[in-house]
Length: 203
Image (cartoon, rainbow, N blue to C red; front, side):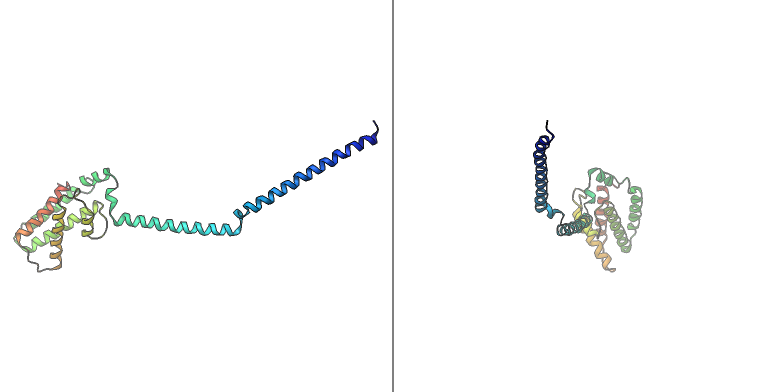
């Protein structure tokens, strides 16, 4: 075969291949350009700045929500309702020194038997404090005894209403050193405390 004719036949093929390669490159460049136009905003500085602000906002918001949950959890005194097993342990007072409570109560009753209104008042105030200590151990929350009584239920303390009245009497005694207390009222109030201890299975 003539070499000249061979070269002549190859040149069109080379030209065609070069043209095709250029065409593919052009298409690739166009695709990249279109991608950048469509999705380039995803990596833009402005968008990243906005995302950072949103992240900071949600972090601060989450912190406030967590703090609010913790505050309400403690304020409402729902710790004692976490689960039935915990409540059963509390009611049995196995971990809260029932023996010690019984000794304290025995001492309170001994003082109450003295024929002196001063001892009756002291006994009632000590009995009130003993009951309040138990309410705290039951997980009825912070605050005053009145706050804890508001959070309690009749299921927990069957004579709750009587206990509220006994608490009111003790407050009157604490505010007024000259408060006139007769023996019958004092005995009824001490009886309320004792019924509460029995209901809470201290005895």
